[in-house]
Length: 187
Image (cartoon, rainbow, N blue to C red; front, side, top):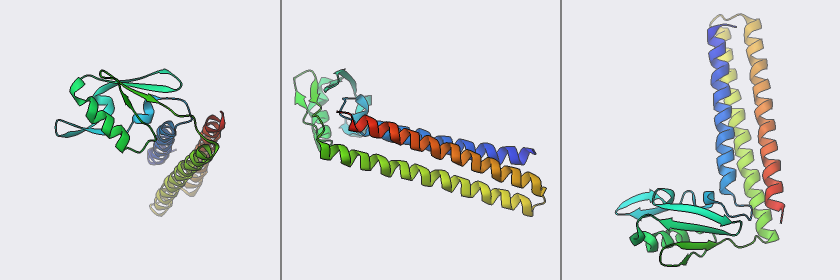
């Protein structure tokens, strides 16, 4: 294979792998009934005039499967963190204990579990679309190479490699979704 074809293939592989990595992060944000510090990811607080991610202002831990402890490094922002968590509409009511915030993660209802599964399916479908878009761009590159004089058999081989990559990554998305669904539906 020519260097140009190797480059096109590697670019497609990297893009698809980034999609999988993004999906894994999105799945971590979808809570499955067990407490996780990732549940607070994306919550930002007004830290002395600068919107700052909560994880940069406090130690976040999970002593057990039902609670999250938020221990700010600067005790004066405890109230600000509490308001930010409540304002993030995560379904949590943090309990201010003076030094720390204790968040009891409520057990999921059957209806809430189904909603979370729907959300996971939407994220998985977005990932599939992203993988297919990367395939389309890679195939467009292959067609352009053909126009630019790259031998037809090499372009055909590139297109078949792109399809193999696509199939692998779509399969990976499906496996991740299946695992997340089981995780969410397990009481």
